[in-house]
Image 1 (tube, one colour):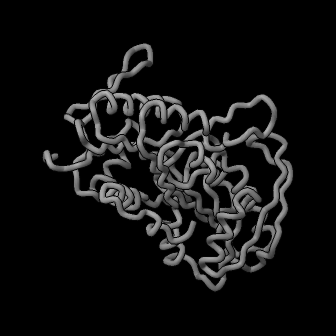
Image 2 (cartoon, rainbow, N blue to C red):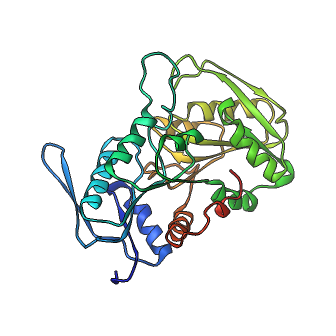
Image 3 (cartoon, rainbow, N blue to C red):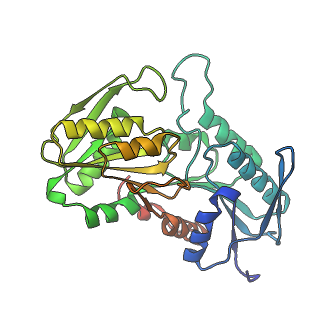
Length: 314
């Protein structure tokens, strides 16, 4: 990269696929970095080119396992010690975001802890997408640019669905705000699935609030982990007379046996972004890229331009 270029983009091991696409959109090469792994599981990070005085963008989602987070922390520390002008963490999927409050006694608030770790390591800014809870932005003492996958999803919805017969749905009450935003923007009706959950990743009962009879249903969520909720919701919609059910979620965590559940469910399709690499095989899974959106956010940060104008709906 030429000496006058004010910024550099680097990638952690498991987010390199996305960083490469972001760099194609930015028309710049991906920065050279060496991540050396040792026999005991430790690893070290070193930059293979000068970053002194540069704005450094570090692309790494913090999905399981914890190595992804630790790798990012080491990348931040190395950049700070190499005299980078500013260090911007680009975390399309922010892990531990579901631990955003004390929902019972004597538990950790994991999202706050991760925010503190990133701050202490030395970030000057965070760019992320579809946090599980918006208030996580307040856990940081640096600016947070919170992007929305709706920028990518809306174009897909309009190109695939017959709008006159479409209903927006949420698989649980917690996602009502997100689904409502889509419904209002597209001028569509909305239905809600109400569930009771005795413990994490386990659903006891679910019922539909609203009418789905003879409708094409689009379930909207932020994270699909075990896929238990969203597949149960889809099957329930079909039992209540829906013509078809598709799902759309920002982050494909997809822990086993999620892909199997999706394949065996009544879902005709499930659409994700590539914030997390989806490595399984399923004909029902469609992946949309967020690389251009993140590239534009990086471009605007460098130019001190507004990022909020990127958002169609929030």
